[in-house]
Length: 258
View 1 (spheres, helix red, strand yellow):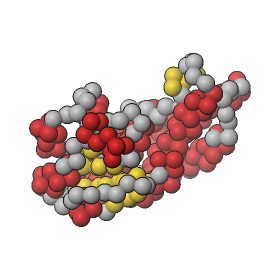
View 2 (cartoon, rainbow, N blue to C red):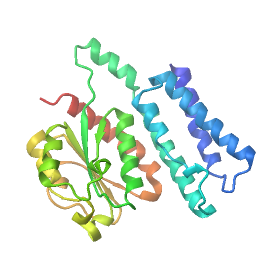
View 3 (cartoon, rainbow, N blue to C red):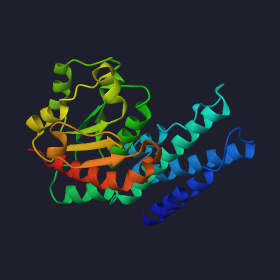
């Protein structure tokens, strides 16, 4: 197993070189990127299983608007490509920094603790500009070991409070991602704002995580009941190590929820 994780470390190191490539790619450059992606997926399949949440999360990372077939300009394609590599690096780093999902699961079974996957409710804006940021945090949460529920996937402009409360009740914890658009657009884009208070009432203490974009100030009960972790959407990979530790603690609290 350690050999496989060492391979994964080397693949993460290769990302910095891949980031130097720019559109339009030559055939050789495209093949180089595809080989890296294939190797990364292969290692994840061997470590966690081909249909695992970790492998699936890696598959969901997009490096192009429609891979290599869209008609977008080079600038837009490069933005997709760079963002995709940053997300992949954060995801792979999170797996390397964790103790190993399978090993942790085996330890829990030996200790008589049920091996289950907690459901995490994600509270975040539905705004299209915020989507890549929120999806990045969703991918990170899945990589740590959560099942993730973000209501934007159900295509409602703004879910009613009753629906949010219902899904919170079926979850063990909450991750709130406060992005800069909330201040300008707020509830028009799916933001309600009371989710943290509802979570404390339903889940109790220790079942909340709060990520706040630089330039924003968290208000309400959130900062009073949990740690606030700031992030820069242009440097998400830099917050990954701290976010992983934060989410792992949340995961353990959720697993031992009464």
